[in-house]
Length: 251
Ligand SMILES: Nc1ncnc2c1ncn2[C@@H]1O[C@H](COP(=O)(O)OP(=O)(O)O)[C@@H](O)[C@H]1O
Ligand SMILES: [Mg+2]
Image (cartoon, rainbow, N blue to C red; front, side):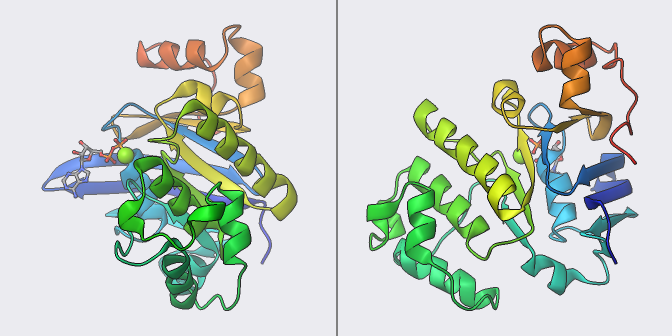
């Protein structure tokens, strides 16, 4: 089955201890695009990502990943996704190389060029170093390496540039654009930093208190809001809405 969407979620609900944290969420991400998922801290970004990855089970709603229902095809789908959720965890006493090799074995991914992948994320000379010696920024880079090394179709990146300096943020931005353009990946990336998203996204979803209040193409936002994403975002946060209906990203 072919579909133009890498992610299509509808009616997602997630409740923790009687509290509805995710409320009737929808998300539609076109293949070959970068979807920026924006929201304040605590708005529900990580929870939505965990639902997409099957790390949490929704109380209601459906999720299609690359055209397949995720509750039925979970294991197969997971092999075609790369992800970084919150702060990535590693085997501390093992080297970066060993951590990536274990990940490949776990994913049943066979051979992949570990050295090349480490070079892509700027960790060329750190492959033999135990992860316990890594700085926060190096861990984040290694997390990105682990997310991409099995050449997934879909990347789900939860605030992936936390802990990186401005130069590192720019390098990762270029890497993400490269992965979409040259490796046919689709990227869903969350952030609470608007400028980070504005530089790379094709479409934007904004989540406020567990509800996706706007979904729109970045170009249409820029047409309507002269100051760009920041203008759009603050308009939403002040309760005016973005001026664009949710669902505009739909076919
Ligand atoms: N396992 C959990 N148990 C209870 N509450 C949770 C759990 N995970 C997240 N929450 C709550 O859900 C809300 C959304 O959290 P989260 O998805 O982490 O937001 P974000 O990633 O946007 O900062 C927060 O109020 C958070 O406290
Ligand atoms: Mg989060």
